[in-house]
Length: 319
Ligand SMILES: [Ca+2]
Ligand SMILES: [Zn+2]
Image (tube, rainbow, N blue to C red; front, side):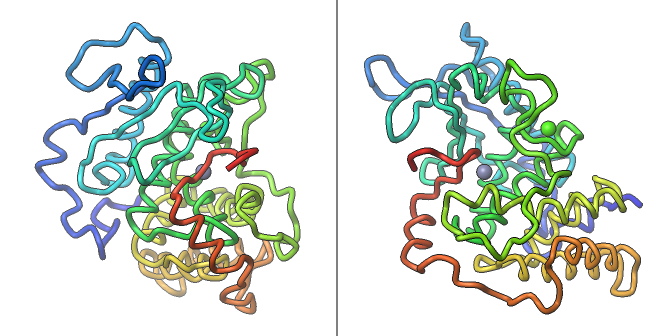
């Protein structure tokens, strides 16, 4: 069944369609590092001329596509729900080494910008070429503006997983990053929500570096639900879970609770859809007996990770 827009985001997004933000297009700005380590400059923006830089053009168009996808799919105005401009930083160097051939992309919450590396040409082509990559980073911004999940352990894995699931509809497949990952290899992807390679999530040490691997667990539960109920229904369910039920300290058990609550609210407690959500979580090892929270990382580490607000697309070699 189709879920009407009116059912989305009932708690925190009462004015789901703010006239001031739907009547005009939300601006996209593409920034690039200035010459000689100078200040960043805007290379292309909405209403202005196209840049001569192909990477800037491509990122700009993908940024527009993400905003339109988010508007039509979720009835949401930009990452903050308030129509703020989408700012992309193309040719972004590795933040630690300053290497311009960075195999990374991330939402930098302090700047409210998405950093997009050029890639080394082997592991990645320029990352702004992936609409689902920009969408993934965009949803980190959505999550930070909604509930600021801590970026470590299970909540960090949920940060990654919800970003992948909510972004996946932009190109209608379960792969993430397939357009820019290993340009010399056909058919592969950075992540694939249909694949679960980790069978025992309890063995994860839970540091920041593991959040992408750990995200397979909730992502695969989502994939199973999408396979049964339809991918669009799954994404809407996840969006309602994120905006109305998930909490900043939620782990996997909390995500199960949040998605079941969303299913009950949308479909009813005794619906086949709600049962499908419970079955999918059970299939990846999360059920009603799963401990609510597990202190996987020291609180100080979690606080430090949250304060940097850098949610990376790939595990950074150096953070
Ligand atoms: Ca994809
Ligand atoms: Zn990410």
